[in-house]
Image 1 (cartoon, rainbow, N blue to C red):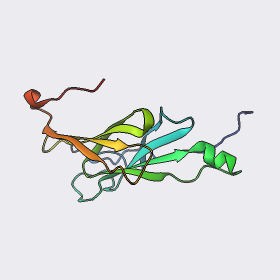
Image 2: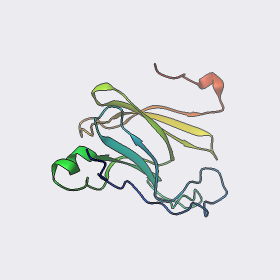
Image 3: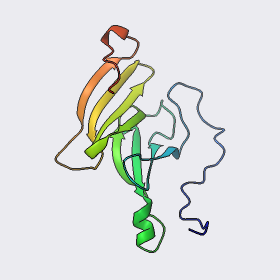
Image 4: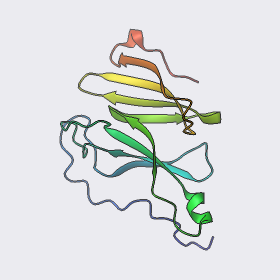
Length: 148
């Protein structure tokens, strides 16, 4: 490439109005990163509660993915993100594995809850998310550890 812009991922204003409570976050896209299991695909999270955990929302966070190759091959910019995962607590991360295997984490400070799901990162409909654990993260005796 000759250094031209392929896609503007996001243009965010100053995040100076984030509520001062636990589990708050900025409104709009956050945590934009590359998927390690795909050649040119981004993922990011958007809060459906405006970043304020006091506002009821279900789902609370939506994780989007966008294949940048798809837009370049079609002669334009990549399409807007595709909703890939939903969480009812605050999104805590995803571990991208091989062959579409992934671990999705969500947590909530007020109840000290952390949940992990086994998910299909390729989005196949015949493989719904399976709950791996739902626990209090302050209970170290109940901690199953981290997968290798």
